Length: 30
Image: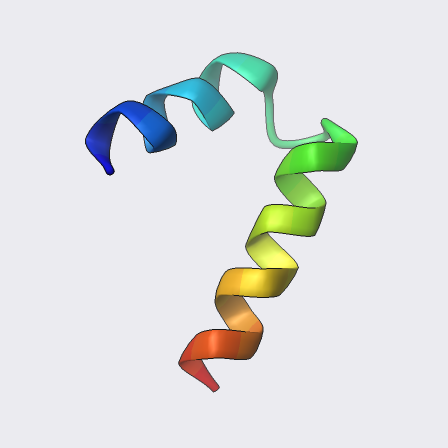
């Protein structure tokens, strides 16, 4: 999972995939 986080850091916070992933993670946590 650490590698996955590094990947999204490389993509950048404004990258569409990062936004989708964060929305999915937020949905799972809440």
